[in-house]
Image (cartoon, rainbow, N blue to C red; front, top):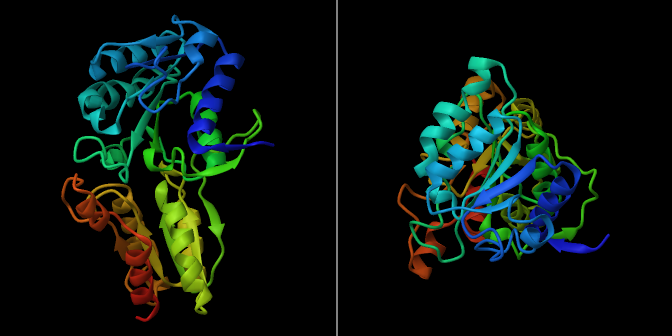
Length: 324
């Protein structure tokens, strides 16, 4: 199997799904011959034609609404947002229509919204935020965030197969940095199932997206000093795998929740709530949250570097947790 990047895994998943099912089509800004702002759809318009790779005006509410209508009529649309930040423009159709249609009517409502999120690319406050927390907890939606090349492919294929609306948060900082073997077309990552990417016995890190690679890098030094830290990749943020989180804490008795979203947003709130209600008696130390402060993402490189979780900041947080 050849080596591909996280971005190439996303493109491969889109291409394979469109070959297999003619009901799958895409809408988004500049996704046609331009190939999207990051190249995720490069070459797809030439392969499938502009009736299936549809360039749209700059109107997120409009083309998300069009995708919801197509799903209502039995198609399987995929929306690409240029940046996840702009999902706020389509909040009403996603939450008021997308999340509630199956509950109201009983029909299948398959639509995938791809939302490139996250910092580290010097995008500033309008192109680097992590708005996944706006949708975590919304009944009727599924929210996923792959942190590996395999899951970038497998979660997207599972999202396209799913009969419910799925918001697929893909981290821009991983697009060309993360590499791995090309998954086979049969690869599917189950929605709703976390994965232990690194076993340990002294503490648990619960994370997702870019946090997975960061956690593995930071714990390499910590584990080398005699500690053993487990890393749990949520993969699905809503509904998330409560059993996997509690099982890991039962083993380690210490937990740190890591996210790139600001500390009062993201998926951390529902995870910390679970821990406080169902894992309190398992803990040997207070549960720790490691996340940026509650500000927009800074534009200045020095400020963004200070804002984002890093190997140094995570290592320090782990040392504090382990020494409690």
